[in-house]
Image 1: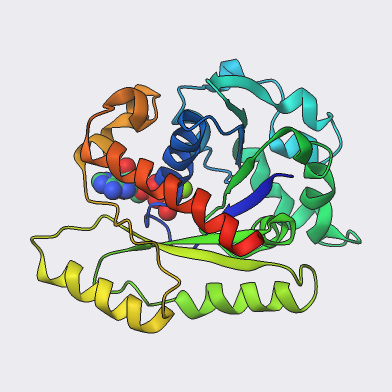
Image 2: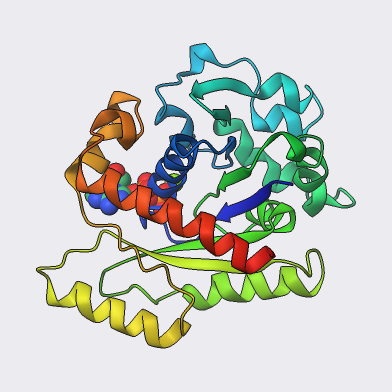
Amino acid sequence: MGRIIAITNQKGGVGKTTTAINLAATLAEANQRVLLVDFDPQGNATSGFGIGREDVNNTIYRVLTGECEIEEAILMDVIENMDLIPADMNLAAVEVEFADQDNKNLILKSLLSDCIEKYDYILIDCPPSLGTITVNALSAASSVIIPIQCEYYALEGLNQVLNTISIVKQGLNPDLVIEGIVLTMYDGRNKLSQQVVETVKQYFDGNIYETLIPRNVRLAEAPSHGLPITQYDSSSSGADSYRKLAAEVMSKGDAIYG
Ligand SMILES: Nc1ncnc2c1ncn2[C@@H]1O[C@H](COP(=O)(O)OP(=O)(O)O)[C@@H](O)[C@H]1O
Ligand SMILES: [Mg+2]
């Protein structure tokens, strides 16, 4: 049965979408069947695969509101072994539209249960907030990956994510685990980057991926070409690092879930 991984941190710009796109692509490259769910109204995981508004009829928003079936929103084989459910701005309305609905936090979970058998990994790219959208993702997930950017304020606001995770664990999803912290935009020449790694290691005590995602301009360029790093520049340090992360995710999963 597939693992559902939410990629979350309520801070913007820390590398959530870059990690979602490129972890999905490197897992797919390793012959895993992957579904990437774009769950951010900004739709960056959608556009990052070169999918524009004109290519999309059904979105995750329409699935959530019951306007279409989940199967109708899945774009098949966006790259080999990887399907995608796109998002657009409409998704933002969920925060208010679902406010009074019973079980508003469990809608994604019940929808994904229909297709979990088909995939080894379902990755959910979360928005930079901790509202209904993110809580839906955390309720549906078996685990969470938290990207942290190697910069001065790296740990600031982290308590809020951890707190939200712990609230979801207490009620909606007792089995949720923190899969790991991934440090992004690492610059080995920069003392600050090294200090952040040390601080985060102390704080999280072992729950950190060994793979450090370097600051790599090819990773930043790839989305504007509509390609994951594996296709945009397969031999870049960025591609290399996400392949290593995918290998860790695959082997760590065996340890977490048996
Ligand atoms: N490892 C990296 N090296 C260089 N640029 C990066 C890297 N990771 C992310 N970026 C860039 O930083 C910005 C924010 O990343 P993004 O993945 O969109 O963050 P989030 O989804 O958390 O808001 C984007 O412009 C992205 O291209
Ligand atoms: Mg994003």
